[in-house]
Length: 563
Image 1: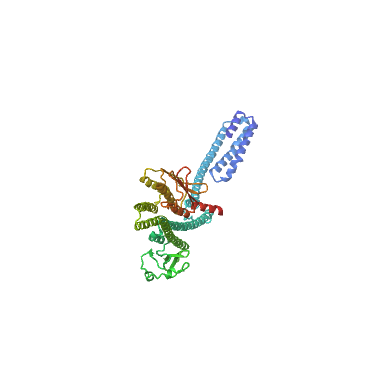
Image 2: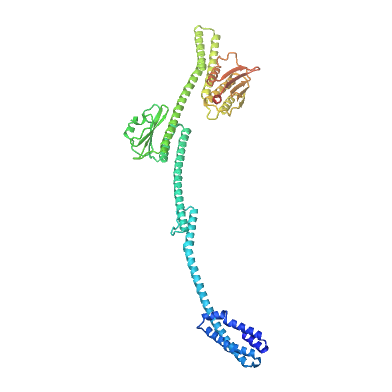
């Protein structure tokens, strides 16, 4: 391009020397300095260096002198200068072609280098990814899996501890934590198992104690079948060889020998040589693998529970406590049986005493009266007295026999008294029904307002007998038409029984024949520490009133005073 400019200026303005010189200087500068000269030093033996030398030589040897000549003699310019310039252009084009070829070679080299660099980069990336996968991703994945297992409660999971980096340190830490948690979990599980076994034993022990207590309370201890309870005790404690010997409080040998396992009864048991088992004041130490628990309540001895242990075995504390509790429960039950029997005997003796007294106070006196009348009759017959006197005595005998028979029926009715678990009200209603069946001339009214009072059996019996005796007396002797029976309580916790009729009223001397029932009522009122009163009503009839304080009220009063 610069060559053409120089030639163009020389053709168009041959006299413009300054411009031509400026263009020549620029061409020299471009050819001899800058990139071309610097690159030439690198390419001395190549096509570029050769063509550059040709161009420089052509410029310096032909073109530049030609330009200087033309500047000196512008008129000498001819067509030969064009050829010189064209030759320079051709040389320059060859130099450009050499540059182009070199550039293409460089580009190819650059592409090769880039390809190699890219391939190397890919290899490095693959190696880096393998390293990351092997040393980071896999350990992290395993650590994550281990952490997940630990989170789900599996403390047996272990992470790989290979290496010395942070992940290996983390793996060792996780393994230590997992091992610690596993040991803690195992210890807790073992504690839970021990506690569960202990609670199970406690529940079984409590259930057995409850069953023993319930069986002893539901039925009479003498009728309790202790064999199932003994078998249950053997199952709960795990001691299979148990013997339960039961005897009376005064006995020296058992009347019942129960065993939890099938075995041959020792000779001393068959011969009832029980001194080794019964004559002791406290728990026997283990002798020949046996522990003996006495069935004692106070000074009363009701037998022994013999526990035979396997060789080398000892009782645990809970087994020992359970055997002691069972022995105490059985002893309590047998003691209650003994006390109940004693109370029944005492009650029977007391009732027999009451019956004897009532027979003496009523029927015996009536018979004595009849005996006196028979003696009078015999004397009148011996004296051959008037028939009118004899008939009078005979009439008195008839009346006395009738009265004695009625008195006997009343006593039998009283002695046959039964509550049958229905309570006082039901028994009184039954009495009223029986009396109404005997006569339609009487109407009865019953006011019962003590359903919430817990009477003792003795209080129920005496209260009912007093009410029945008073009602029967009014029925047979009042000659009235209405009987009112009331049982109420007042603010002083007193129970008040009233039997009121509208008859002729009680005579001034009620202790004559046919009125010995009053003595019976007074006797029963004394048994309850109560007060009995019999009085005539203002208008007509008689009122029998009995009041007493029940045992429950006395107990509450004592507790309130002590508090």
